[in-house]
Structures are given as structure tokens and as C-alpha cells.
Image (cartoon, helix red, strand yellow):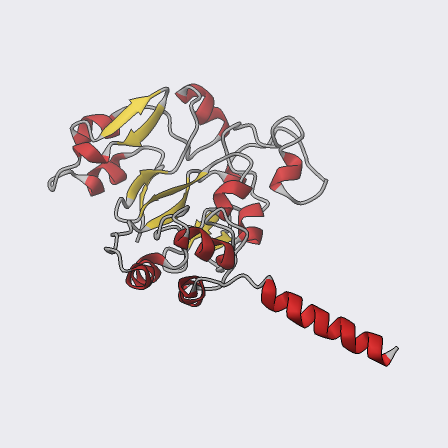
Length: 255
């Protein structure tokens, strides 16, 4: 038995050398450059898979959102290619209702947005609004999001890596990834008429067009909802005036 074990061992050792697949050293170098979070934000199974894909030319060097510009520059150096400027993004919550928004029924089931959303689209009268159970908080690997006193998710721009996991977790799709420099935005996604919004949420956009008139067209109201067209923004755009004049205070600015 001992002799047979020795022979099998020698055979396996020989086979491992014969069939050994050499790994490109650049893959290992890129793996060490990546943050190692294995968050899956890049669409790969983990950092190792992303490293292989980058070396094979199947993924961009900007694919790692948590790593940001620093990791992008390191990968560019390893591959000997020009570094790309990575536009910093951050998660933004497009709802400010929460507890202030009217309920259409009392929910007593599993405390998850994905669960309550299965029951007639959620327990909120606003069909566009946040359900407030914090699925987005639970999936964030970077402690960058939490619920405030109104059960609305609040994002910490300093901690947010724009990995997109909160975006995927939200069944109402009220979380978006926006450019970090575009700080002013409308914290609402309701496309209901103003009279309907007023009856169910005190902080929802009513499509009054005050922002549109004051901003010279930087704000545009379409389908009863205001949005910002940053391509029309100018150095003298009166951002603060627009924020202050919004009657429902749904236009906000990140710190």
C-alpha cells in the first residue's frame, strides 16, 4: 500500500507539472492593486476574475468602482497604458417622503423592501416612493448608507464608492448613481399630477415649474416632474434661489 501511495503521489506530481497553466504575472499584480472587497460591483465574481478580464482585454481599467482613480492609475501603470480619468460618482436617493408619505395599508410582514413591494407595489400611497425598510443599507459593504428619522436612506458621499449594489437592491429604483460634481438634484421621482402628490406626500415634486422659470431652463419639468439639465448650467445659475423657492423643498444640494 505504501509503494502504491508513493507511485500515485509521484504520478500526480508529474501530471501537475505537465499540465500546469502559467499565469500571466500581470494578473497577480493587478489582483494586489485591487482593493480586495470582492463586492461584485464590476459585474465579475470577484477581484481575481476582474484582474483576469482586464489583462485579457475583456474589462476596462476603470471597472473597479471602489478603487476609484487611484486603482485605475495603478492598473494603467502595470499594463503600460495611458491612465483614464475616472469620473467620480455617488449614490443619490431620489425620494424624501418616507414616514411623511401616506400609507395605503398596514404592513406586518417581513421587514424588507423586496417583500412589501410584492404586495400591490408596497404599502405607500406614492407608487414611486421609498418603502423605508433599508434593503439598500443591508447590501452596502462600505457603511455608506443609513436610514434617517423619516426612514429615508442617507448616503455618505465620503464613504460611497458608487459600487451600485444599493441601486440593484432597491425594488422601487429610487437610487441612482450620479456625478459627484453635480450636487443639486430633485429628491423625488413621482410623475403623478401635483394635486395627487399634495394629497399623499408633503415633500414630493408638484410640477409647479417655479424652478424652470427661475433657472432659465436649467431645470426642466416633464411628466409632472422636475429634473436638472446640467448641459445648460452656467456659472451664474441661481442654484440657491431655486432651492429656497421650491414650495415643497424637494430640490436639494449635497454637502
